[in-house]
Image (cartoon, rainbow, N blue to C red; front, side, top):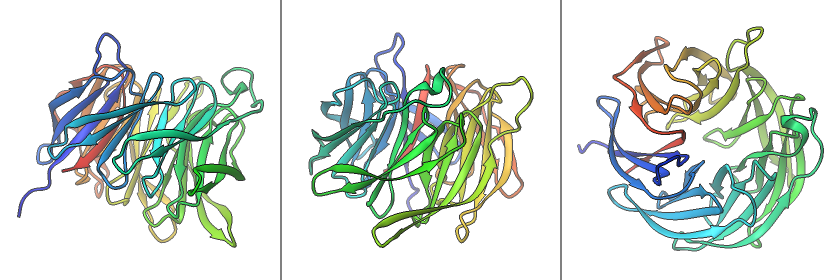
Length: 349
C-alpha cells in the first residue's frame, strides 16, 4: 500500500521577502516539513483550497489570486481579481466551488466573486459593507469582518464581525451570487468573534472569540427555509489571569473532525478539544505552550500524531508530537524559520 503524501501551504506577510506562500513536503512519519517551493505573492494573509481540491485561493494586497494545484503540490498561477476594497483577511469558497467569499477586516466589507469552471476568479457578484458602532471606541468602534463561511447545505453564509460582536447570517442565492441578511448570532460585548468552523455533518457551528478567549458551540438546522441556531456550550480557550492580555486566534478541525484546536496569543498556547459527534460538545484534552510568540494558526497533521504552530511574532514554526489519548504534547525537533506566518493548510496529493 502506497503511503499517503501531503504538502502544506503556509501563507505569510512579505517583509523583505517576495514569497508570500511557502510550500512544504510533509514528513508524516517524523512530523516535520521539508521546504519544497515558494510562490511570489504579496502579503498572503489567508489561503483556502477549493472543496474539489483542485485550486488554491489567496488574499493578496489588492484582491485575491487563484492557483491551480499541480500533481506534486506545486502551484500554477491562474489569475488575479480585485475585490474593490482594502486588503482582505479571509477567503473561502461555497460548497459547489462556484463562488469565492472575501472578508475585509480593515473596511468591514464582504465581497462575493464568481468562479469559473477552470478555477479562475471572475467578476464581483455582490459586495456588502457592514455598518454600525460597536461597544468600545477602540478596536470595536466599527465593523471588522474576520471570517465568511458557508453552511454545509450551501444555504447560508456566516460572517463574523469582530467589531460588532456578532455573526451575520446571510441567505445565499447561488444562481445570482447574492446575499441577503436572514439572522444575526449575537456574542458578548467586546468578545470579538473571529473564526467559524462547522462540524463534519454540518449540524454544529463553532465560533472562537478573540478578545474574551472562548468558543461558542451552536446547533444549526434549516427549518422551513429559516436558519435556526441554538447555543449548546461555551468553553474557554485559556485561563484568564489578572493583568494579562490573551487573544484567541486559530480555530481548526483535525482532518477526521474528531478534534478541534485553538491557539492563544499572550498565553502562547494551543488548546485541543475532543469533539462529541453526537452532541457537538467539546471536552478539553490539554492547553500547552507552543514555544513561540503569537501562535496565529496551528494545526494537527492529518494523522493526528503531530502538531505545528505558526508563531507570528517569533517568525517560526514549532513542531510537537501529540498523544490525544494521554493528553500530551512534546516538542519535536527545532523550529523552522518562516517570517510572519499567518495560516496553514494541508493538502493530500
